Image 1 (tube, helix red, strand yellow):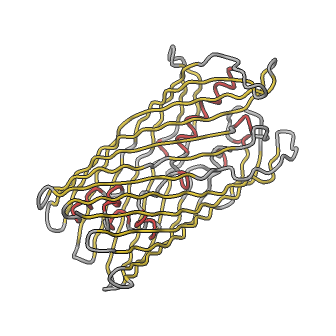
Image 2 (cartoon, helix red, strand yellow; image 1 turned 90 degrees about the horizontal axis):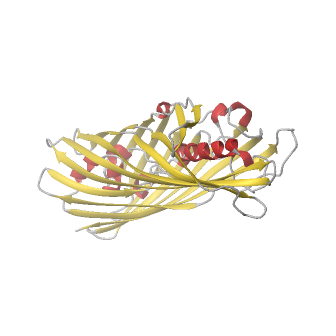
Image 3 (cartoon, one colour; image 1 turned 90 degrees about the vertical axis):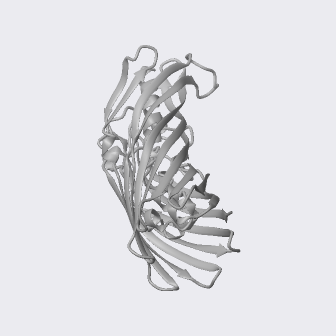
Length: 414
């Protein structure tokens, strides 16, 4: 039973952390930027939703501005050729990753000619995965659910006509719930669930330099957020649902990674603009995972992870059709932090290619709308839990993954 509890607690933290890589990192914080596959997101500043990527861009928006939007995330993940520890074939698992909606919003206000303030609400982490309770890898996870929210008060200052600086405070809340299967010598098949949450803080520093009215570059750094999750574990019969043990408190430390982003935006002529983006996510900071009992702080589990830093590259272009309509397009390459030896059934992740398009409609001088569509193709991923060193019966599988994103936002200027 202790082994089961240990793995369940471990799964909570792994799920929360893995949620920040590739398709489970919810990059979708701006429908406008999504239309360009987030190329130039750090330099674009086309509306205040871009402030999530670069707070310094607030200086490009006079008066008071509001942005409200969201993205419907529709992933498809299928586990094929599933085999248990004995090599026996299990049925394929369809729709492993479930759809979700990620809202976002921002408001900004100009204090004077140089100073600007803002507040953004974003959901940078989110995931729902669910397998059948009897599948071959039930000891490695059945259901995983992550919900997060980040509030970012921001300020920007126009140092010169060309240089703007920005800063923000990340106030980040995370909530995670998951279930894991196991076997009890007397009760037979059992499930164990855990739910935990945390509220912690980080910071953001950014800059934007405008060489002229047509060309600008942006640089932004988001710090890691050091979370201490506190949760409650319960174990119950998989057949009757009756509890087998009382709840027991656990805690775990984890650092969500720091990120460095660089972007460039260039207006070619009255019709065309081009942009590019590079982001480095410092996942190598996630090397060790420690799980402790909350009651006496004794060590429950210590695991070496050794994840790698990841890169995100994007290029895009926009075409001004007329005074009201703008067309956007872009593509990107998104690298996974999880290599074969660290891949788990909870996160069947791999490198990805993004293909995006979008439209902006300027209704009048105050009101505009953005819509975007993205198709993400994920490389095939092989799973072999014997390589991870985690407890639980071995399972192997081959995953095929893809994601569709539908973004929409409203922008209003007072």
